Image 1 (spheres, rainbow, N blue to C red):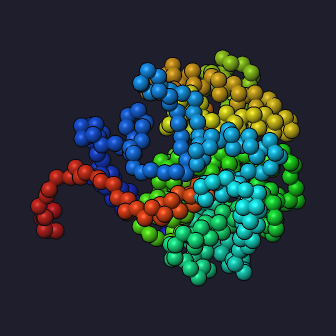
Image 2 (cartoon, helix red, strand yellow; image 1 turned 120 degrees about the vertical axis):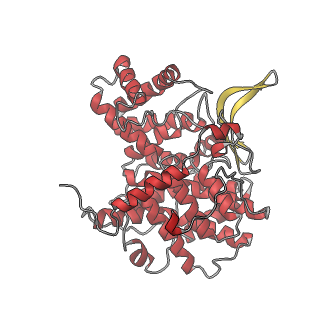
Image 3 (tube, rainbow, N blue to C red; image 1 turned 45 degrees about the vertical axis):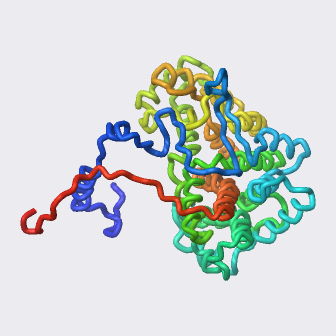
Length: 456
């Protein structure tokens, strides 16, 4: 029996008719974008972004100069000028967690000394405290099936508890950003616990946050019913959070942060807008699609080691014959990277370790095989303007799954990491006191004369 929709949510025939009219009225001739030299999506045909701002915070590089010409190269990611490989190697070689140290770097601009890091971490631990009854009155009421919407609602509600809510001075915004960095794990995971309790009838677990320790440890502590986790689990999650913290100024949610900050609005409105941007499946939801695609593949491919059988499935994916019939191999390809995504390269080594601990090496081998076959198949089937390789989403969903994280928290985990980068970009925008960001759109509508209502 089809699920009943209440009258408030029903899409009526009248709405469908109006939608058909507006679709016809709004459709733009695609040829106009080329003829009028419009960079649709602020990118040209080769995927190069229109230069819309300057930033110290991070950089993405995927080309090198050879004989004066740019050519595809292995991807590199920099945080404040430091290559991501060097940063991760630095804290992991000393057996330290790195998310907090990297958050300090992104926001303050320099790597902290041990004393500066101690002060910063202690302040983050202090901010792991939600207002009295906030969980009961906000998080547990009207739980949503989408944790990103729950997160946005909670962020906006925190505005009401802040006595300096609209103060955009740098010290106050830094304080607000640090508080949100500390609170994002609780807001996301408590929201999930509320939903699975009220909608799925599961036991409700609301653990108090750790009074000290890393963000990764705190996430696993408040998520799991018994609060237990292994050292390897926590350290891999920490690395994954660092890899997701920022990605240049041009990604959609970070650009949203700059755009909304430029209006001089409050921190809570800015971060809720960024969360809304990240929620979209074209941005933050890709790792869910990768995991679901692999589940479909594992069910339909009999021999996971057979290259011909796996290749045939991937070709059917591109031909819109498998999975969601979108014609995509999720987790393969990137708007900037061509030969490799440095985040995927780093993560892969940790994925192998975790798969070994969890007894899932056969699945890891399948991921490894698809990583090798998919770029070849895509290049053979479609015209390519640049190289193609797996991106960080290809492996991150597999990691989250092995950590026991439900699909509902995959994208919120992205937000828990990226809030540090958004904070750095908000602070940078305010520090430069830039003008409001308002790009130009060219109208293609013809001038028309008004027609009285009885003559239409």
